[in-house]
Image 1 (tube, rainbow, N blue to C red):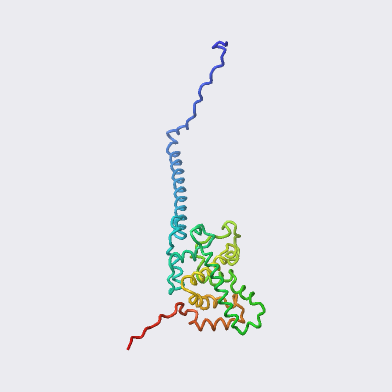
Image 2 (image 1 turned 180 degrees about the vertical axis):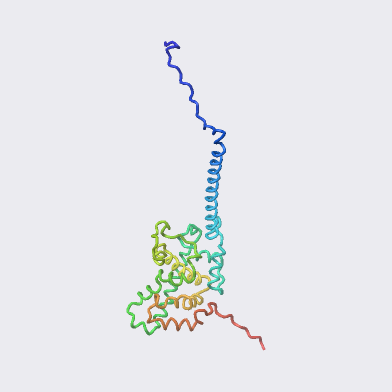
Length: 269
């Protein structure tokens, strides 16, 4: 066994160095620097917090909080009623019409079914007009006319933009903002994020919702007085312009009534 004297001496515990205290003459200046740095850090933290709160408030005011996604959205109903004052859309129907499948709240209902119905309804009304037109003889492919007139991008760029659907809808852009090219053309930019397609789908959904809620007669008037006139020379060939304007005029023009007038009952004599 080793003697205690032969054992290696234990290392003394290291003393943790403390920050040197400033000398009395330099203390006020260094203290001011520390306080200024701490104040700047607090201001930066406050700006970050305010920015996060503002972003959260904006998101909640526009898309609503996650807990409210199941509930009716009054602003969506208000937008549709501003477009069509005669039509009193129920809140649940309005929410489904203006909620695209790309939005997270779509798990509680979206406009996919209304899109499907509205698209078929518009095709039917357009085909009825084309088949009754004298200009049909000069157009060999009627299916091409329908496809070009009711193209989703055309509907979205014309009708959807005029109706302000992109600002009112619940939807998610298909491309992140950081991936977009800076200085790109505005029209191409909106096409890149999918706005025109989303708006075109919403136009179809509105037609489907009107057909579902108010019937075929109101949907027929809506198509010929509010939608088709905006597609003249933007999708509908010029050969059918007179036919489209004639049908629109027969229904009261672009600002004509959508709901049929209530029958008046004469008092019995």
